[in-house]
Length: 123
Image 1 (cartoon, helix red, strand yellow):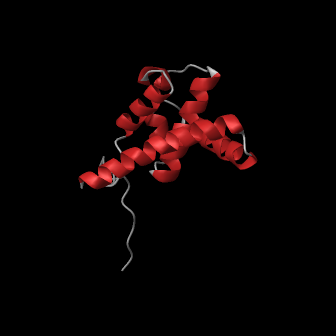
Image 2: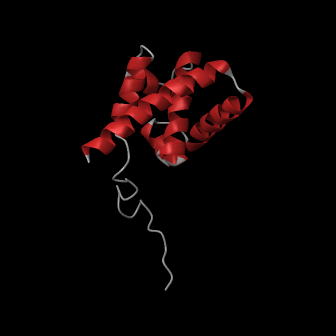
């Protein structure tokens, strides 16, 4: 018997997993941590600090939540290629040991883990 993966476009919400973190709550906590607001992270601003935080959020959601580039792009009103570039940039900067990105990524990842642990305890 051949099984094929069903596209999430056929049944919206199919790609949502029961163990996934509430994305908006995660982004809200990240915004609070970096003394900004959620609308700024969603905005088209190119301010370096905001862009770095946004790209680290994408990286964490891509690597830990298994969100794809297109889904993240739709959520943030960006093209999937922009998200792809951001995730790869963070990955490259972490590999070379960039202190600024490493610090931001560590903080974003810790927020993700706190939310993940909190939701796991509520189950």
